[in-house]
Length: 112
Length: 109
Image 1 (cartoon, rainbow over the protein chains, first blue to last red):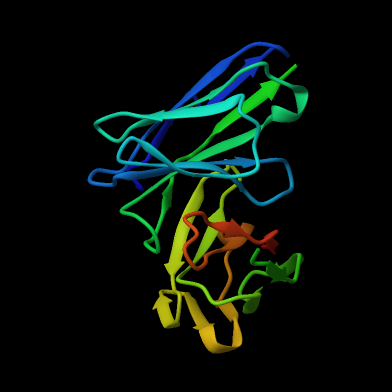
Image 2: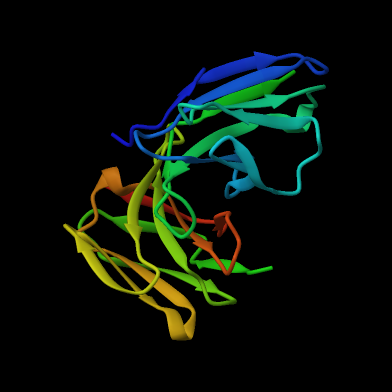
């Protein structure tokens, strides 16, 4: 039991739509990161939030955006969905840099 | 940026066999983790091991930071060990985990 929970677990959306994915971090963890994992590949870093501020961003377009709330839970929003956005989206929480990160079970997004 | 390479890409074992998975990285790191991804997609933490050796039951890991590699040992493998094993590193002032491409393990009964 990692304590990191994500919702929903599965989602099907139509191209052009918008989606919001949610993550509750492990108790006491102030840092949340989001990753995208395409089929057959390793996870790719999207962005990280630390104490409600974006702390870094990977090579993803601006239609990928996020929020972190005062309780350190987080949302990932994706606008104008494209077919290539179909992937497993993983949320990880930690106490900061250089410290072990724990992952949720992921949200599997399918864009049709 | 830092490169992470894992080998072998695929591995098939008979139940009870031992195996060694390798992770090479191209620069010094301040975080290295091994994960097991189960068939449902969950990444399970195995080890946080930027240096040294750790053991947890049938699994153990060694990171030789000066030579930029880490090894994951699985002894007496079980069918439940099947899945994908990822090595991930965090380097320098970077705040993100960079994953290797994984080793896909299948343990046959």
